[in-house]
Image (cartoon, rainbow, N blue to C red):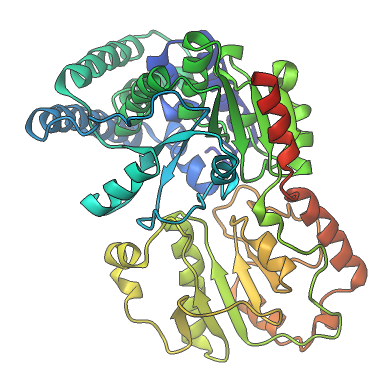
Length: 495
């Protein structure tokens, strides 16, 4: 099992070796090779390596079949539907180009989910900007959305290009498929890894990354920007975009914005497998992330600084008072992962079946729509009277908040809410952003634990000023206030 520490370390070592040995875009584009960090959901795709032989073979066959179907459907779309990316904006040369994600149909907002208003403020200063958005919408793109996106000088990456391009991608990836399929290895783990690489080489996610790199290269060639912004978490697509800039556009500089947080167990973002696949700059959202990147091997030839984040908020002081009593309302904030949402929601529904003294308010991650989630999970359509979806609710400093891997907890902590971390039996380690270091953040693993916790009447019985201050100090190092002078300095360097 991957929960075994030795297996975990062996796996990471082999994956890293494969990345160092294979610098071709066709291999580097395989997301499965880039181990982001410990997380139950991320780890689940590697568990099959340590399963029984019959389970592994069945998984492998299904993986291969999905890959073949992916190629066939993509080629059919490219023939029957036509070219889904077929326009260029009138404005050619721009100062800044960025890559982000289309996760909300409301594209009128100047704020981006990952960059917030950092990019738009550069536009307000007179810099010309264009962007490429990776489409994550679960619904079809309407003409209205397309018009609004184009109006902001942005492009949308869809799920296919023209037939000639797609057949070229398929030919290259089939060669990778065959190369790893017939690669001889005496070691069973390495052999299984090679077989999975062959399957993932023709997967939908790999083709998406290759398609992104092709469109990105064409757009950079057209717009000729001085600066390119991408997010930075160590994903495969981030690395191959860095490579495109460094190999083909030496006058452009690429900035990786680490918008979230570098956890203790982060892996891909802290490792350099080849300098040409790393950004020129890494700008972090806070002090802790900067420190962890600087101490890693990726920082040797990269400039690292703190840009900050709007998540820092507008206050350094907690609104919780030691004598404050908490309400019986608990906000529930999962990550944008369906299985993680279900873990938290099911826990609350289980508690509600035993006791209805508490009110639970479920708040889905912004990248997951309520309609889509309920359509996939109809069991949540009808809920107990004390369980509600977040609509017109507001966070109050006397509320509780139940979470697991969500980084949104930092903002709610500063609003004065009492954090409760839900531990799960399948966890190999904590996915808590506070990393289990502070008593103020409570940990529960059962409905009984929650019952005992809530029965304590006031915050004074749960914590003290010293615990509050230590957690606040740590939180203020997770996210720093936005420092625009950092960007101004880089812009002067490349001008």
